[in-house]
Image (cartoon, rainbow, N blue to C red; front, side):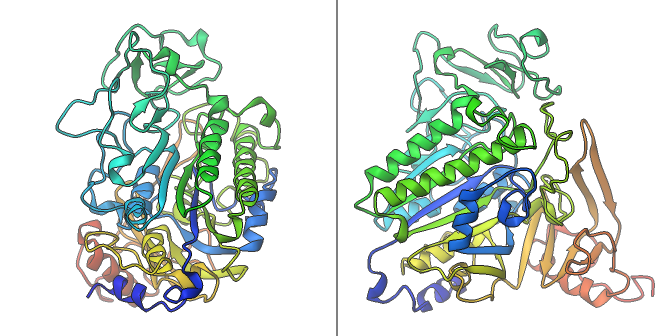
Length: 515
């Protein structure tokens, strides 16, 4: 029997009549927000009072992880309960990529829909749209997409704010599309006559690197080319308000029945162009302003839950898809204005890297009717949310879903500090493993974003690198040759779960390590 299913069926706290009414479930999923970006995690230069308040009333995890240091893989794992490296298509996608989730394998949204929940997405998608076998028609019904994997209602962009098409999509159709101005999208060559950042730099209000210098929308050049859809194109300043409004309407509409809402705003992904009322709201420039805006959205959602009488019976999860990045294609002052703020907290690296800062992220869970408030040392991963929520509603996991998740519901509710034995960290198709306070990085390159136009690459030789995170959070002192048995132990974990992700022999010995 599947061990996840066994554990979910054995959890006593949800099996009895005390929780016959299913709680609402709200995922608030930030973008490129690091471990140290909220006040409750030590942020400097930006205030996040709404998030801090949720953390005080719930459980704030010190060892909470997304599964990957980039967006698409983490979002895939969050919704499927499966590590993204098991799906070769689960990598950073262009805006016209086909759907990478197999509709035949139920996501957490499909699972909850089938168990009586109203389900909705508002915000970023970036998991592909359409079929790999047929050209996608942006001007008709766009499918398969969120609906086919469990979201009864969806309002989203196709990929990211810096990738075309720069439009909103509601339930599979572009919002406000003029049939006389059809949308075309291409990532290999220019389509139409729209100006680009390269051809018309004088039209830009924000300088961008070469990758982000294609079609200009709202005075900002993007990745990829599009034509048409001029009436449907979004305005970056209004994006947070737009996604928030959709989410609040959904909450109000479903105040009498349980719902699952996946709210995934753009903040703090580039381009960081916030509404004028938030410009200057932090000391960190546009990136800090985006964090303040994200916090405001959290506050408005909580207010809406309270207004409708749903707050106490709503499980709220706040986290991010990967670690932080300052410069990521646009010259917006994030590097220059960062000051003493440490976006990744005490951890090394950030977005794109296998260092801790790439995948250790803010991780807050609050269910006012049930949580035991506090700070938790339990090691938890977003891949575990699917199995844990199955336990929460007292239903077994589907046979073909969530293979990598564990039921950690008692830890998520603050009832125990017992979490995972180990956590897998992925970045750009390579992985690392943490167990207890030990972190092992297999041979290969660790790449991270440095300054403007700077990528920092660290070559990891055999037998890999070993760090003790409690004593060395910056991952600066390699202990692989001091503790060869620990290298063997952690290397074996990777061999067992992903043998193609580590080179060399399955087990090492002291002679091979140079002793």
